[in-house]
Image 1 (cartoon, rainbow, N blue to C red):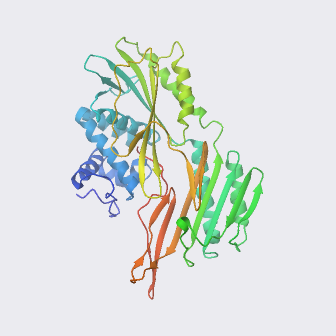
Image 2: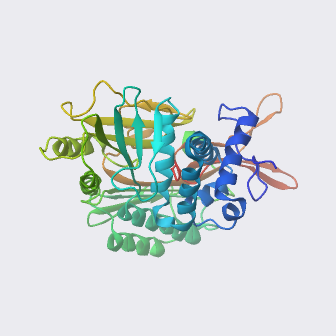
Amino acid sequence: MNMQVTPAGKARATHHVGFSSSEVEIYLSAVESVFNKIWLESGDLNRIQKVWHRDDPLATLELLALGHAIVTMSNIDSAWVKGIARKVRTDGNKTHGWIFELIGAAMFAGAGMSVIPMPENFPAYDAEIRFADGYKMNVSFKSHGMSAHEKGFQDGCKLLRNIAANKFRGVTPSFCLRVTCTNHLEKVRMDAVQDWVRMLIGNIRRQDQRIDLGDTSMVWFAPIRGFQDIPLHPRYYSDTVQVFSRQHRREQLRFEKNIQEAEKKFSSITRESNSCNVVVMRVHSTANIELLATYARDLLNEPNCKVDAIWFYQPSVVRDINKTMLMHTLKPEIHPGRYGLGHQLKGKVLHGVISTKSSELQIIGPHMTIPMPDSYVFQQADHYSSVTMDALGAMNGIASAPAPGIRIHSVFDNLAGSVVLSGKFPDEDELLII
């Protein structure tokens, strides 16, 4: 069976992955075999099901990473891998934690380390990494994704965009809305913004119009040119919605609590002289790793700390105008007096680059790049542009995604009507598996 098509029959984007067709088939088949084809296609509530139904390049990369982890760890303990899959299918709330336990173990095993998964319900940690001289690292894998505060922000912004589209589609050929809040744009503020957009008049000018609602400002206009300075098609609705908000005051503090809870789990075991205890913590792309490192150092320096090292792992999608790639940020914090400095962890990722510095969150727009540290950002746009014709009569169009959430489509007009050319791009660059 061809694994390189979605359940809807759409071809998966595989041209960018750097693997042969047979390798792609092996990894996708591993996902289908372990998680069960019927379950994968039966819905889209679980994050793995959601990615399985998509055909864009980012979805393919995530599925291949999952398949590679399955193949790698099945060669070590196939029953453990099947147990992970069973828990993923039955406990959707903890899916990302179970997935990271699998992918994290494979990241070290793929680099040639001896990784031994622990039995189900084993206290304190998830795997042992054993060295030839008998030394071992007791590793606990933890995953912390998007917070409830940020999810509420993102959901509110999606509704805001729908409100604007329902009001202005068919009224104006384009609409751009930028909302900036100097505090956390929580539900009360978001509701006020949504109500104001509902009340906007339909006559949108090309020039900026602005209103301030306390600590929240709104700017809106009807542009004639879009990203990359493309002329917007006059008969297709092109929209841009960008919302900037400060993070909730406890956004980063929640990680301090998570680090402390991970450390406490090691209290159930007796420390051995030829071992050390390590926490490998996956954090969301909006996490401030430098701040988290200070939390980790403070904890490691406590005299009764049960953990000897904390590794932060932050996968993210990074872009420039020409390419999209995965960045894997690894930042270790260790206690040199307890951590086995002569025994180093080695990791290997399937795709992308490894860095010790986190990627910078930025907003990219026409003629602007704005750093957005410690912020929530929503950016979604669909821009429709007419194709151009060169001197030889050839028609040229653009189908691209120059920035997260930004999609450019080309419109081919002819006597019979028009045809829209679109690329395979995800709605957002949120990693659901890795």
